[in-house]
Length: 348
Picture (cartoon, one colour):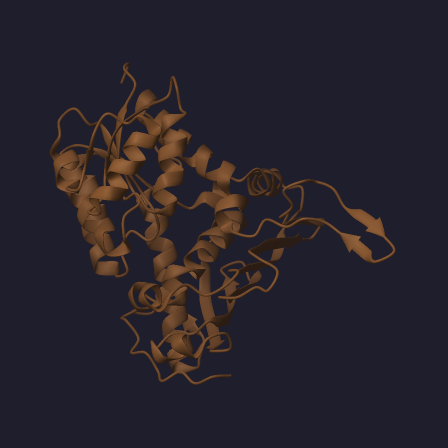
């Protein structure tokens, strides 16, 4: 494609607004041509704020518009797969926030639609575009750490989301841990062969009443014998907490810088430094980089860096973790991973 790709945004919530701001600033890379959201006031307000020429409450209108080359799907989770399929049917490339869908069957239908159409699909695993994670990945691929032996990945949110979000989220593993699953696969460069997961309700009884957990540890065994752990919590008293440690035969790398200003002050009352409170701030630049990469793939007719199959692989690990927790046993990834029936969750 020689002209700038014309992009439409679907979904004007908090992450949609971040993507829109980045798209609007990508002069020379893409044009934000339209925004869509069923809440007319949200679509209109975002379009007016960023000078977008068109807004609509009907996502199908921009998906069918032949002047639109690609779409950013930042709408509610249950709409992702359907919009991916419609975009593919109209020959449009798509970027989607995670997950593609909450079920493997719907994910597979969306991926099949993309394959039939020959369009591109990129999944929003933004950690892959963070400067720290990217540097660690390149260090690992160069062999600087030697043979990898262990990875530890942790993510904790400042506070749990509202009850309505929990009810529609698909559960901790498909909603939150899916980022960790993608991260450990990507950094380790191999697939886990076995998963063991356990969890509790320690943060909010509302989450337990919804049949979910808010605190979890997942243990992974990789095909090489390397081991991994993933820790998640819906609450971190000091703000958003994400950190990863990778250990190899010749060294280790630790990613986890969460300061806005790289400064630490010492005085009589202690040691002080700032902390980025929420993931939108922590990964703001990574969000910009992933959207730029998507637009560049369209403009240069190149493959996207995080194709849809990566989203499916992470969701498959979420299925395994759910079954492991429900059945209190390790689950091999090559088992038939039908949906586990949720067990009754009690506090602690």
